[in-house]
Image 1: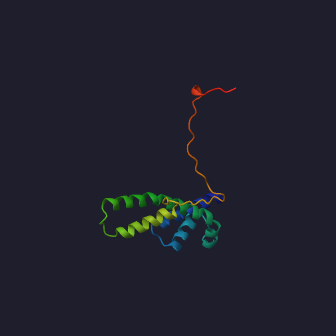
Image 2: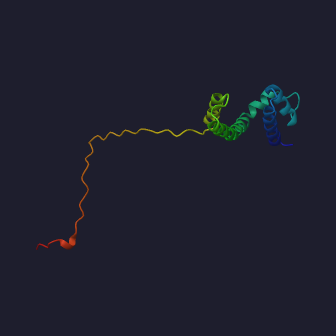
Image 3: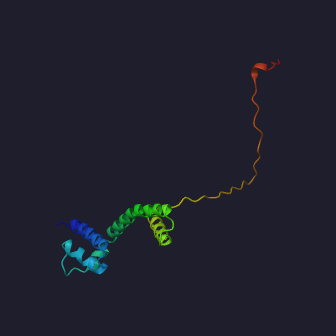
Length: 135
């Protein structure tokens, strides 16, 4: 097994264990052994070396939660008197915010022209058929 394979397996197993509500310290040990690391290998070293991969996996899982957050908000719109609705709204908003789904905000733009602006009336159309030729 290559080092890249071990890293991939470690991250996948860690994510799966965490998803199954295994305590983090135990999840790291499970992932370490599943990936083929020695029992003597310090888990903290593995985690430190895979920091970016772990964060990427966490980001991917967070993005997947956006669907659930949107569905939760949709359900609350249908039944707003649901018990715990305010907590669900707050959690959903937090997930959407952290995943990068942001609300559109109106922005006010003020422009100051240093020399002023003059508004001119619309130009009148000139009809050359009725024009008089002067020589």
